[in-house]
Image 1: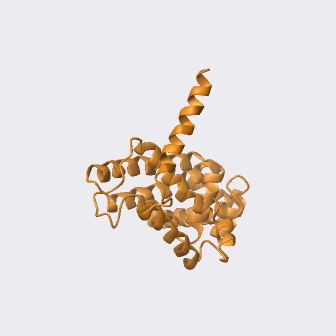
Image 2 (image 1 turned 180 degrees about the horizontal axis):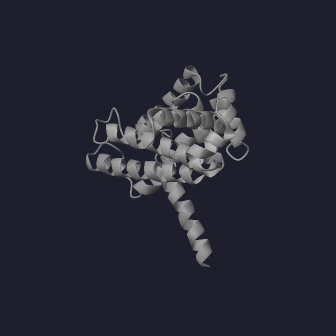
Image 3 (image 1 turned 90 degrees about the horizontal axis):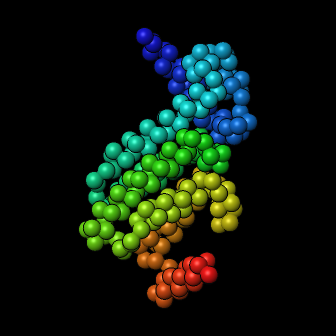
Length: 216
């Protein structure tokens, strides 16, 4: 049976790993560097996690639990707090967590894939319910809609530095930068972008022409 101190030490190492992985990248980080950041020895890291892969799995599980917790809180809530906000809340956490997620998605870790799948599944369910209630513009492919929305949101994490530079902000982790970008997302979601509805028809015709060319 583990003591309370064991769990505290384990959490400290995990938090140090989140920060180190987010700063240097998961592949480039070493257990020795994580141990130094946590103020413990490298053998103690191995004692708690077995290997670097085990430590990375613990970080992934920690993030997954946070995502699941956010969804539990918002599941069935009002439109003011839809399940997609679970990912939004998580991504707005300034610091190691956001940087870790950015690296995980850049390096395509198994944990990143699980997070993406879970969030898309939940968002698709929520869109289905909203569509049934007449709260969103109907779609015949909510799966693709959900996946596209999540990919868009994750772009803030992976391309955050470029986004901040493009809008003249110092860092995407600054509140002002996130508010400016966030307002644009809400505006596009709620009011749309094009004033001419014929864009939808144009897109459908292009897709149909491509399909016909492929059948020739």
